[in-house]
Structure formats: structure tokens, C-alpha cells
Amino acid sequence: MAELERLAGERTALIGVSHVPTSGGLVQPAEQIGRIARGCGALYLLDATQSVGQFPVHVDAVGCDLLTGTGRKFLRGPRGTGFLWVRTAALPKLDPFVAEIGSATWDGHQGFTWADGARRFDTWEHSYVNVLGLGAAVHQALGLGLAEIGQRAIALGARLRRQLAELPGVTVHDLGRTRCAIVTAKIDNVPTEQAAQELGRAGVNVSTTVPEDNPLDTLDRGVHPLIRFSPHYYNTDDEIDRTTEVVAGLAR
Image 1 (cartoon, one colour):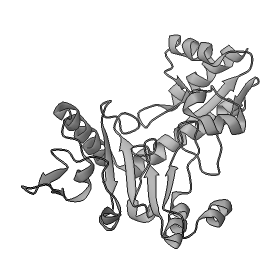
Image 2 (cartoon, helix red, strand yellow):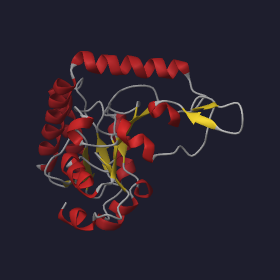
Image 3 (cartoon, rainbow, N blue to C red):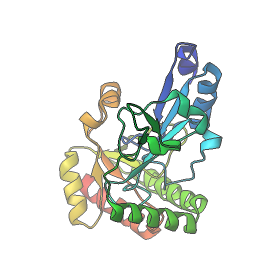
Image 4 (spheres, rainbow, N blue to C red):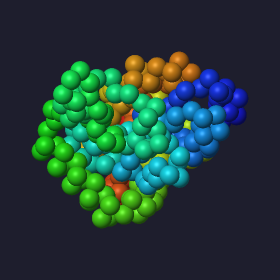
């Protein structure tokens, strides 16, 4: 944060950050970054792909000018859906890369007017079924309560992270002071892809981090690929404990 504050200045046009990186359970200090962005007059873009639906994200508290998210992750919506939120005050500083049927209105001559709000960044062709599915996922999350979802998901992640860290032959690789439900780990002498397949056969659904999806983190730490566990509010303590038992068996 000190380095970001040192680098940010009058020449800074945009500060963009992933709220939660795909490579681990780190939660970035988004509110502090927002204060730095406002201090130097830069636009602030928050990629909330991994955080929306996992725990509450308040744009006013964060202070971002743009927020992007996807439906298919912790929000539990359909694949192929996503959204963009833009602060009204930031719109005059932004121009979409193309004018589309739904993003602008023709003026009858050789000009056009952008649509109101973030719709100027929308595309005309989209799946109405998926949009309805995304809406259903949002309503379900709001109905359950994002604060409650966040508390439950983060607690499950902490339980699993603590248990895995205690296993001989298993290393947990999550960074940061504040961590979320995502847990990344590696089993000694067991290739990550093989471990993921063995976990799948045991009924434990995991994914893996891929070096090319995390180039900067890969260069810094050299730990990828990793097994990525992503418990959510619907998981149980028993399922977390059984996951630890399966990993322990693979480590042995």
C-alpha cells in the first residue's frame, strides 16, 4: 500500500485491482486503495469477480468508480453472465470502444448520443435466459443475506485452511492479512492435477490455479499450479473435515 501511494500521482489515470485474485484467498484492502485513488484524482476500477456473492461489497464504502463482476462464481448464477457498475460522476470521463444498437441513439445525421448510465457499455446481443438466471441468483443471495453468507463462507475457508496447514506434507499458499473462503494448497510429491482428479473421485470438487492465468503471481512466487478449494455457505463442517481427511490420505 505504501508503494502504491508513492506511485500514485497527478499522471495516474486509472487504478485497477482484483478484489480477490483467482490465485488464492487474499482479500485486497479495497477501501484503502479507494482513498489513494481519490487522493490523486484517478479513476478506480474494482474487479469483484471473486468477491461478489462471497461477502458484502459496498461501492460507496470501497469508493470505486467502476465495479465488474461475473455471475458464475460465488454468486452462483449462469456461466456467460456478468455486469458492470459505473459511478455517475465517472461517466463523462469514459467512452465505450464501440457504438452499438443498445448503447447509443442515432441523431438522424452523422452522430449519436450515448445511452444513460452504464448501459452505454452494454452489447445488443445477449441471452435473456441467462440474464433471468443471473437475476434469480442475485435475488437468492440478497434473500439469504450477504453478511450472513460472508460470515459462513469465510468461516468455512478458515476452518479448512487451518486444518490443511496442520497436515504433514501439505502446504497452504494463501497470502494476506485478510482472507476469504478460497483456499489454495499443494501436496508434496503429488502433482496438482493428479491430486485434483483424486479429490474429484472422492466426491470433493476442486479446481486448480494455472500459471498462465496468474503470470505476475507465478513470477513472484513460483508456486502454481495449486489445488483451489472454494467452500461456500451451503457446505457443512462435516464436508470440510472429510475434505481434510481425503487430502491427508493423499499426502500419506
